[in-house]
Amino acid sequence: MTNQDLALRVGLSAAPCLRRVRRLEELGVITGYRAVIDHAATGRAFEVLLHIDITATDLTSTEAFERRLAAMPEIIEARRMFGIPDYFVRARVADAAAYEAWLTSKIMSDPSVTRVDSRLPMKTIKTWE
Image (cartoon, rainbow, N blue to C red; front, side):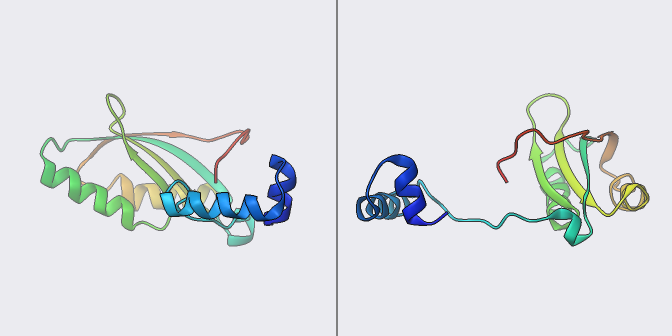
């Protein structure tokens, strides 16, 4: 959105609005900007939510598992959770066949993984990305 559009939306003129935005950037409140991706255009429209449990109880093994997750281009979000499951993961692939191949070869074959529960979203109602 342009500064002019933002200013109109919040009821300010353009110059004070821009000053406020710059101040929020300097304070670290605004940490960056993003592009909105059309996932179908990238060939990764099939999204799956995974709950993953692992056997690791020591920090070294846990961090190694997290590095492996972070390195996978299919994973668009990964969070270590309090309680169950150990991890919440969002993945995007081309289709169900690509998901099955990726899940089998990359996730289920990981020696740290004890359980994977896959959820297929029906519809996205709200997102921050």
